[in-house]
Amino acid sequence: MLEKYIEDLNLFYDATSIPFCVFDNTLKDLYRCPHMKDMECSAVTMKACCDRLAIVPLDKHLPVFSYSNFCFFAMLRLDKNINILFGPVISMPMTYREFDKYNKSVIIAEDMLHLYNVSQRGPLMSLSRFMNNILMFIKIMFNENIRMEDILTKEIEFCENDNGKEKHKSSDNAEILVKKASNFQKQIIYYMKKGNSSAIKKEFHDTDFFNYLALRPMTAEEMIQIFFSYIIICCVAVMESGVDTGKAVQIFDTYSSKGKIIKNVNELKAVCRNISIDYCNEIENLEKFDTESSVVRKCMHYIHNNIQSKISVNNLAEYCGVSARTISRHFEQYCDMSVAKYIMKLKLKEAAFLLADTDMKLSEISNQLSFSSQSHLNNAFKGEYSCTPQMYRSQKCQGKRK
Image 1 (cartoon, rainbow, N blue to C red):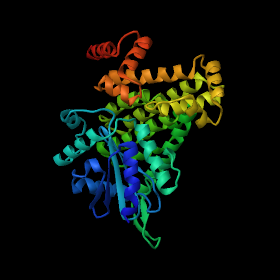
Image 2 (cartoon, rainbow, N blue to C red):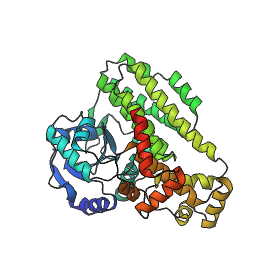
Image 3 (cartoon, one colour):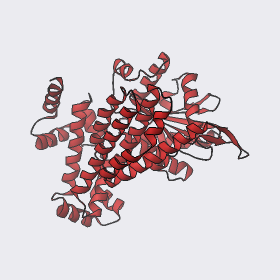
Image 4 (cartoon, rainbow, N blue to C red):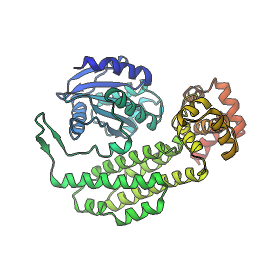
């Protein structure tokens, strides 16, 4: 059965540069994309992948997203015997020493080296774009439309055998926990995407989810796992809503450091509440920027999610289903600037984020944001920020040291 997937998977790799590994339920490594065919990870890692996928029903193609201190992965069942692991995807290149510092959760040294080698050959892209690519793969491969809201229901505590009978079921307590967590986060994301921070505060005040957690014996590691799962989904939800990728990731990074020192359920609740409100405020600010033109709002959503690509007025017109002239007219009327100027401002804002928070070279930033040349980025950046990119990075680094 594997052969029928290989051609499509290699096309997916050619289009996205996301590394992948195909494996079966016996932990056998079946196939790897060309650039990582000689790399291997341990049976311990493969078993962990199988265990995570075992909680998803066999007839569902729901991706399981995983976070390992710094890298993001997506696991997916292709059929009842064959699985696939996409990733890891990281936001910047790094030395092995830096990678080791961020990935203390990897126990086996060989796996650490394996992940490092794969990540260095992986793409430089946003978490939002990575997930969108996986969901696009599912749509093309299985003709299924899955959004991030659907992934919230993936933690189903049973899977069925060929006869449709229940083969495994966790304890009632675990099943209740999963349902409560799923329902609670669905409600929070609904309010978040509406920009309704007061409703989020009320939901956190009224919910019994955290009270239920407090009654269960939970380790610090389990609370951290719940926390990271929560903030990853929140981060993706706001990027889907059009919040600037750099801003969303910046908030994520701020809270991820706090998540590692959570000691009890009250602290978990407080941090989850705060990041939910911060993300909600970003969406609220986005809505306040323009609430009169649905055309402009749709364009903003497209531009935010495709900031690394070359974007034309015709791209936006096709996405919105209106004429290019309508797009231009709405931007001049509601934003007091041209489409091209708005796109450039966003690209330069993303460039500023990469200069301040990564070690990427200017040429790499230029390529990632689809500038025609490094000098084009340099000149545009000077016009927007009144300094060269190098000067901007130097100033930000000095500020951090202080």
